[in-house]
Image (cartoon, rainbow, N blue to C red):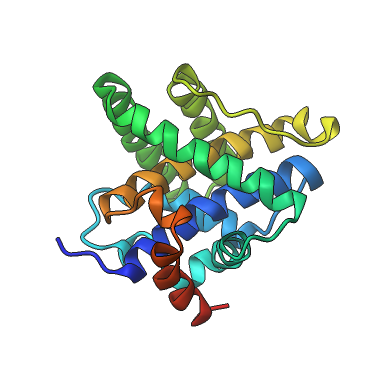
Length: 209
């Protein structure tokens, strides 16, 4: 499949959106639910035929804004934390790809969680908290066993809030998914470093934010 700069930019923005939402939850205890949902939902898009089947541009608008600020070298302390999370997610995704047993376990568990989500939805029952809790457990049982581990920085009252920590772990798992997709589209770390690699990304971002 041939991927475009737009595909790579959307997938990269998704990584930064997950990272940004993790920071918001850790520092403030809350985050925009529509963007959280877009990240979580991406985990349940199995074998997509295109990037647009996983994320639409409006799904990652928050990520677009963060990515643009970071590529333009914003010195905001918040952005430094977000960049660190994003780079760690990319590293972890590469480590995961070398570990077939972890990949297989995540894939099987995602299918089971999706079936449970569909069952609860058809039954008219609330499923968000249940799904997020199961995704958080999946992250702890799989990605947390790999190195490097992500150390989330924030306020203790938010980091000790179980609902928040579950959402943070689910978002980190979503970030791994975005990082894998980004690499599938041809994304490389040099896109974040070299000016001539950043330029096409910034041109696309200018069209959205």
